[in-house]
Image (tube, rainbow, N blue to C red; front, top):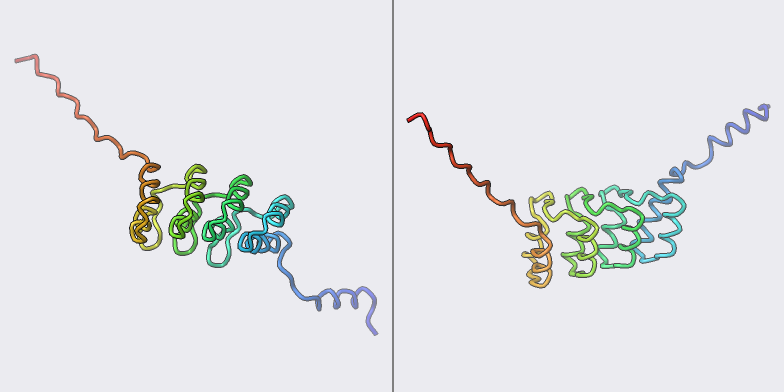
Amino acid sequence: MYSKPLLLFLLVLALPCRAEPAEESSQALLAAASEGRIERLVNLLAEGAEVNFKSAGGRTALMIAATAGNSRIIRKLLAFGADPNLADNRGVTALMEAAVHGSEESVRMLIAAGADLALKDAAGNTIVDRVKKIDNPKLLSLLEKAAPPPPAPEKKKPKPKDEAK
């Protein structure tokens, strides 16, 4: 009735569609970060999972680990090149998550990795604004010490005196 090649083609079409292997491993990376499964996380990254993969909400494995205050996972993700300055769909970064959830160790790690303290979430709040709202003086002090100093005001050069007078 059907030729073998046509039958084989129809069988392939009937197979369920699956996510691309890279996306699948990146989704698994988010789960490993959420569950605190460091060995699984390292294996996925070594196999090529995208360290900065974003969920539909824009969340990365680093943001997930920061929310949980899991410094071991954060350290590994940063070692594999996770970007501490990526923001989710609400403009929230891993540093903001770590601070709001009170993880001083995670905040220190993220700052050391180059997290930008000047970034703002969708509501226009910086990390310092967010920490002030939760009233955590210890974290606020840490952030203020880590913040770059404000630029010095420009000194006006004295105008040369008119020597023609």
